[in-house]
Image (tube, rainbow, N blue to C red; front, side, top):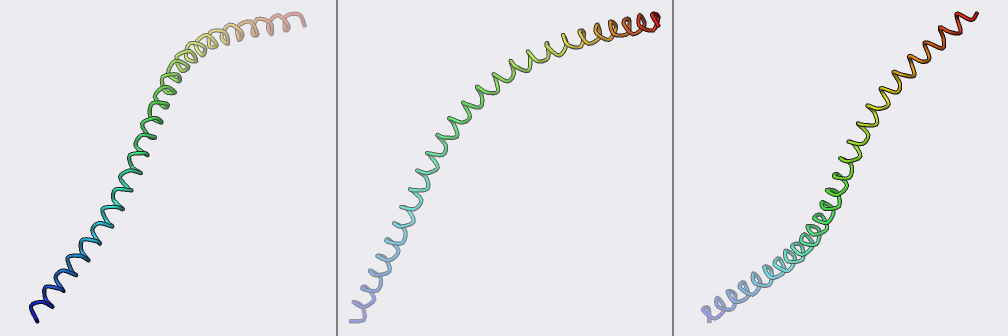
Length: 92
């Protein structure tokens, strides 16, 4: 009789542990699936951002050349302004 009660207790413990770990496995499976979805979303975002970065690189290059052009234009305008101010002073 004692042997059967020990066997019954062992069967119950095995069943309990099995169900407990099955629940854990289910939870982990759900988390893995969520992570896969988020990984795919992040990959899409990375590709979008890479495209934006490349676009910005070309814009930066364009802006650098525009800044250089503007610097020379500003220098010319300063010289013209100084000449105009000198001319005005001479007229007075």
